[in-house]
Length: 322
Image (cartoon, rainbow, N blue to C red; front, side):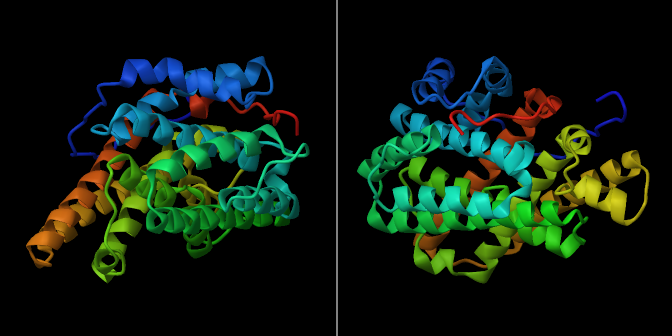
């Protein structure tokens, strides 16, 4: 990290932390160990230092303990799989990724486990069962749609890595908006808060713009903090590195440009929120809840990114029983 300076990112939203955070810290590690998701001591140390429980406790500050546990386990599962997609042998094997993720989608649709399934599949089946018990069919179907989008983003990034190219900014944005898991976790936030966005708002173009802006903010924050890791691992799916390579500018300049883009996007999000017309009293209340969910995610992600050691380790990752 001493090769360059990371600027302080603009994040004006209040920081909240779930009252169950201490319980969650112990529970989070127990769950991944129960399903043997950490292949070795190195993976164990990586997970412990990542402090995903802090991200969950800040992103879901008001939910009850059981929903918080489920929300945290979705975070743990996706981040562990994300490492497989980014820094394991799978990162340049899109066809192999497709096979794994095809099986994950089958499990989320209710297919039974077999003796051939890997620990990630067993953990996913547990998550599906616990989530499905507490969620409506309508919510779960939309969540499944978001999960499929996330998987597609992972495969698209692996395809670009296999080609050995630096994507242009439009291609980078298309892939990153899916692979960062923003749609997925905003939907998990609905579950954790026992809330579901109505179809009128979900289909509204202004609300869609708010979602995209929030997801860009989450992605760019992660990209800025993960610059060192991805530079050393040879990855290019990062706003800083795309600008660094495509525009042939110094890395520090690319970091500062990315930080400025992040800050301007936050301001644009706030301006759009303040300039919206009323949807009517009932819908306005629901939209306010959803905007609060987005703010909680932005704040928690920014705060967690400054604390976690997740982005300092560039060691190649092994998948348990892969």
